[in-house]
Image 1 (cartoon, helix red, strand yellow):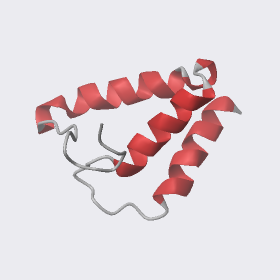
Image 2 (tube, helix red, strand yellow):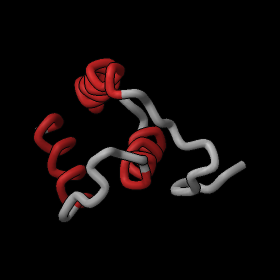
Image 3 (cartoon, helix red, strand yellow):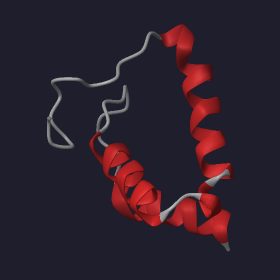
Length: 73
């Protein structure tokens, strides 16, 4: 099993799937409060390590945490 952040099995998608990836991400955020904490932790870890067309996102960890906090507040 690969560690989080290893790009061996990284999920990459073509540009035409961008709207689908956004919708799936939106569904996860909408369900955030109902997810068990270990699942939330895993999702955040995967999000921190995920491949993205926008490689450098300043303060990524803080921004991810703030996004899910807004949803659960």
